[in-house]
Image 1 (tube, rainbow, N blue to C red):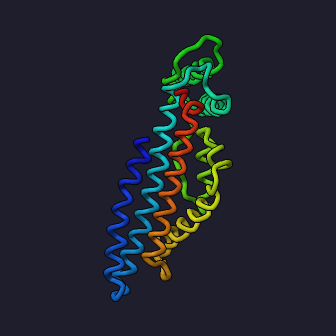
Image 2: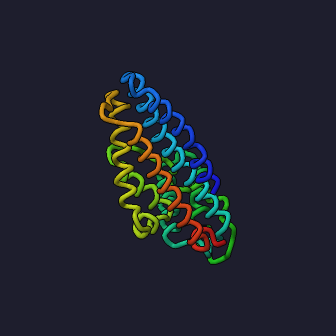
Image 3: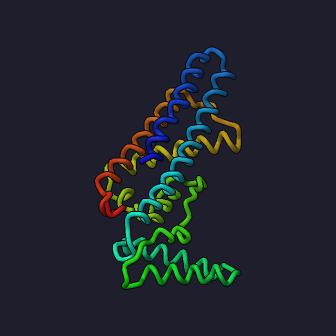
Length: 213
């Protein structure tokens, strides 16, 4: 998928910072600076990747399915999002749109569902204190629970992502990361790469389910 390809390509920027850090190990201030910049940039790229992927994934779902082939798990999630929007929306015409979306979801007459992008669940990823929990919530909202629950080694990858996010939060909020090394950054980069590649393989194996392709 384009979002995965783009993420893998952009990781070369982290490689550049790793080289700069490695070349400045004798200068502690510069060494720590390059390492801290690399951690923040790496975690930011991962956040952007997750949101870009969910955007692409959800639009591909809506383009491939009709209301009759739409997975039941997602039907319930989209209907819940529409119902919450009805409650919170003040404008009558918008409320009607949400009502019509629910009617489309449960109609017995087969129809395209591209217009249901209006009631997609949130695409946003919040780092919070526990990255793994937020990632799991994001993937669950978009019908990807099986990737988190069933793919081998994903839990180990998520635990490493938790470590990355903890370091990132220390840099952002306390300007502190005294023990971080360029080797550690490279390990985290490779971990995120494995996560993206595992997701890519999972999507390819299950695209008939996710996208009706």
